[in-house]
Image (cartoon, rainbow, N blue to C red; front, side, top):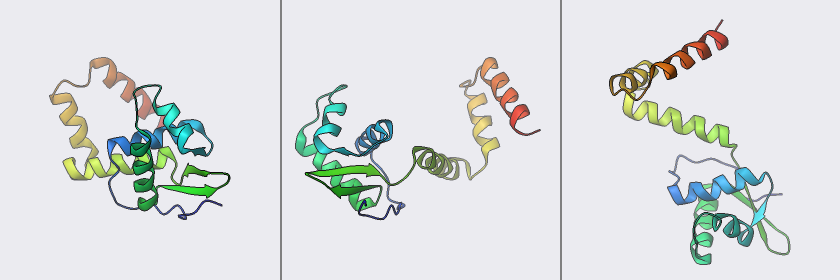
Length: 130
């Protein structure tokens, strides 16, 4: 059983912490610190102490849990989709007062959405909101 109970806090996750979470989500199973570091090192070099510090922070925030085997193994306590949903909602509230229309308008005004993007969104909404 993983310690920490999976309580997601409102504490912010740093970009480096998120990279560790992405490794754990992609793995689909608990990993030990060396396995996490090996997967992180496929993209760039991570010091062992850095990885251990970030793991400790994620444990303290309740985002991952740990299980003692021959060494500690770590697993996320939150699904990636739930995390993304929460971050999206937070972003929307922080910058657009919770109004998705304002976000879409900002993207269109700044020309960040192409005609093709808009057509894809239109098709998505028509399919999902019949």
